[in-house]
Image 1 (cartoon, one colour):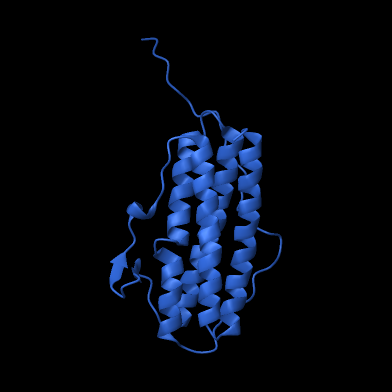
Image 2 (cartoon, one colour; image 1 turned 120 degrees about the horizontal axis):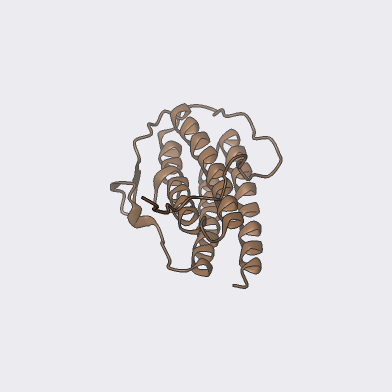
Length: 182
């Protein structure tokens, strides 16, 4: 039997989180605050969230690795950074007295479980990268709104550092858009 099998020739060995080369502030809070924990749960698993970003980047990476290995590696590295953001937010939520249950409050105040309905899954590379860039821009805006509502400089220092990574990701996505002639 002489069947040919498709193989992934795009090696992801050595791919690391793509982040700004600056340390994160210590993960600490001034005290328990369930209102702040609820805000961070939106960043953790709301419509605009680290959970959504991770899932969208991994989906896009999976759809690109056969034809655009270098781009897929970059998207995987960004997804890995988003995983680190998710982990840091989870720690802050617990320190603030909250729980991580993949449920965030929607605009009407009702709890809603994270769902893949939050994702944008476009059909071509340009639209994928544009959707990823918009998601980063939306995340930055949401983090800034939450920082204006949180009166804990320890929490806000971590959010400000996450924003630096998100801004870096936008720069990388713009570069990828230029590379693919999009």
